[in-house]
Every structure is written in structure tokens, then in C-alpha cells.
Image 1 (cartoon, rainbow, N blue to C red):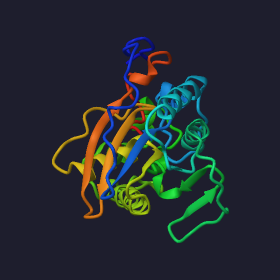
Image 2: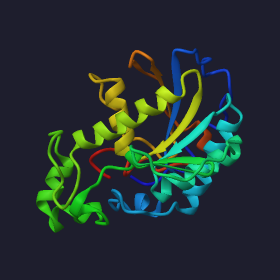
Image 3: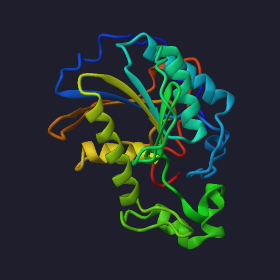
Length: 258
């Protein structure tokens, strides 16, 4: 589907829509990275390090401006892949998250550096032999990998070093739970990827399907409790993209498009 650049409402309410976070919960604002040229071209990214497009950077500034006018952000976490990290750094600068950290990798592969805390477990699903391949050509280039990518079998790995959905689910949900335990009573931002965010939705709503693809620069709010309770407070909000628009196709915004 063609990109929609003018279909978003022109106004949205800042602040007041998000409930005050009590000491029992961490409020985690999960954001998909801004758009890339590969998203627009429908090319499978996986864990390849693809830059934001010009539109993607504008989307990152738009979501950053929105968050800067909402309740305070205590910390910003991100996948280490450049499209997510650049989005996160724009948000961190806008929201005044200027706390400095010593650079190191901990036991969970988290690199702590500068304004944004990088966590490798927030990366996109590894799409194996299909990374870098145009989606329309994937079935011809590697039928076995293409079948695995589209499969609903959660334990099926994508040939060529790719992950199963279960592997993605386990690392992403563990990462978010770990972040929540560090930030009870706080509001934090996590910037990640389409399939990874779909996995988080499944953890919070095991019996409910994620409706459509996770759109670029969309805002998705979770509350995580001390009792390991996950609640989705809002989902798929792109009202801040009234000037930039977004790809209605949402390509790359789920486990089956990478």
C-alpha cells in the first residue's frame, strides 16, 4: 500500500491522557523506530544496520516533541541498531535525559553510554537468509526461509542463522521486565522494532492478536508491576505524525516482514 502522508488528525492532546504512575508500576513508552528507505522499499531488514530516512528522522523529531510535553521521562533505552538508536537519541535530547553513564556491557549485553542505554536484547528479529532481500523476491530467492518467516509456528527458526519467534519473545520480554524492575514509579522510553514490539504485545495480551503492524514512530504504553503483571494502556498512537505522515503498509512492523 502506498504511503499516507496526510491522513493523521491535525491535533492531539498533550499530557493528561496518561495516568500518574504509582509506585507499583513502571510506565514504559515503547516506540518503533522512525521510517527507513528499506521500509518504504519493502526490503527485509532484520538485524542489518539500516539508517533512518529523511522522513524517519522527521518522525523521530515529531515523537520526541510530543514526549517532551508529556510527563517526565526518567530514562531512554534502545536497541543498538542505528535506526532505533538514532530515534532514541533524538528523544533523549528533546526530553532532557542527559544523565551520563560509564560505557560498559553487563551480563545482559546492555551497553550503557551517554544519554541512551543500549540493550542488544531489544533488537529486531534476526531474519536469517532473508536479510537485505526485497520481500517480493524472498519466496524465489529462498523458499524455505520465506516459508519460515511467514509461519505461525513459534519455535521455527529462519534458515541462515535466523531466530524463531519464541527466541525473539524470550529476549525482548526479559529485557522489558528487567527495565521495569529498575524503574518502579518512573516513566521510561524504550525504542525497538516491529517484531520485537509485537512480541511485547503478546506477553501483555496472550489471547489477543496485535491488530495490524506496528507503525513507525508509534507510541505504545505498557504498565509493568512488581507482580509481573503487564497491562497495555494505549496502542498504536501516531497522532503526533500529522505533519510527517507514515507508511500505512507498516512494512517491517511485525514478525512476518522484518
